[in-house]
Amino acid sequence: MIMHPVVASNLRAVGYDPISQTLRIEFHNGTYEYYNVPEHVITS
Image (cartoon, rainbow, N blue to C red; front, top):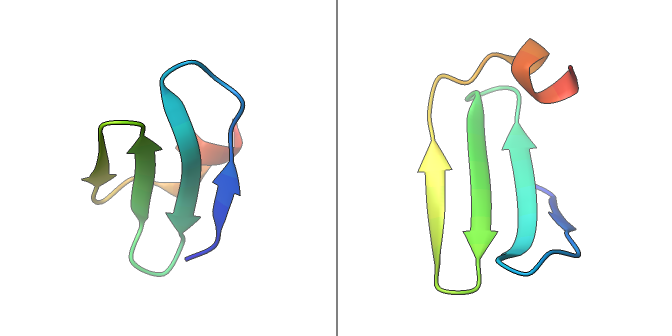
């Protein structure tokens, strides 16, 4: 999964894997993964 840096006060980076439909969000205090996220949610 390619992570893309984000310029925000609480976020570090975000990434999405369309094969597993996993959204990963890296905060400054931890990382969260969300599963079964349809690609249209990411691209809209």
